[in-house]
Image: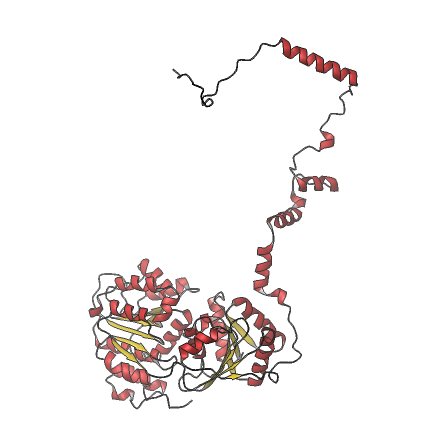
Length: 502
């Protein structure tokens, strides 16, 4: 950890509420980061902020301090509705919402402000009861927040502060219509403090700020897009060499913490199987992992129980895990911005780190957009023979969850039907011990009488002369019958006139 990421501005130099200042002092922080030094003087005066800074530079503390300061200095607004909240903080992911809550706890420990959280995946009734008991600051993800809001668990008519964190990610995940819905339920922009923070401020984010904020001050920390404390390096393996190269990199890193980013869940499971089979302690974090298990995995990674985290892009935003020494892009991301957020998991809060990218045959073309976005080339190391992991033990990949799902989807309806009939054959009311009967039922209608049993055995066999005599008798009978009147169809044929009926 270094102090080169800090500014010369002290928190005590700013006019922050004394109770919040006590919380800052308890955390051990004395100097502001650049984004804090530029935004706090404006936000403390009540001005709206649209802020951009590199990930891991203290944006969370900046908007939390400004929020708590305003709530403590202002009297609560009157509301005619049930459980009005004073401040709302919206984050795109569950992990980011949880992290904001954890960062806010020491800052409010000397105040009477109450914080609550609302995110999907777990603790539905528990979160609801906590919010119904009354909270001043509600932190959460859009889906669960709107769910509770529509049920009347809390109200927004007396809102004093609204904060959007990682606003560009809101667009990427399709939450922007939900955000606009929440804005329409709030007081006008002039009656509240509006803070928007993100690692990147795109045109669509700027448009959102223009529509729902009151003349926001745009604050940007001019620096390289990727942190200057991150050492970037790339290798160019074939697809067959990627896994041995990855295991060689992890083996060389020893006990250092590392995050491995994968594009697909199937490949993430495959990497997990390879690492476990060769003695590497790892955890897999993907979008379908239950929330409680996800929190447990992150806890194990933070406390060092396992030092390798395999993750899809669900973990690229909002995770603040200290002492991540390196990040490996096993698959290059298809979105250049995701590269910045991925490698931002290392070199946080002034630390240094390494970002390793594997430029393979499948995703090699993505490097062009990435280097154009970050405005510099990534150094490539072409010699990888010394890094390849040797004598790797191959895992049983047939047991992967994604493989089992593929097998179940691949079965034809006929195969499934046969399996089901075989499984329940003993319970079928037509079941019999006769193998021929079972074969007959599998081929067709089980109620159909077998062909050999359809002719009655009691019928006498006719001679050819008797059959001929029967035919002549039938013909004679038809001659003696009166001729049937021909039926005229209602529609008729072309050119044939049909008389009107009635």
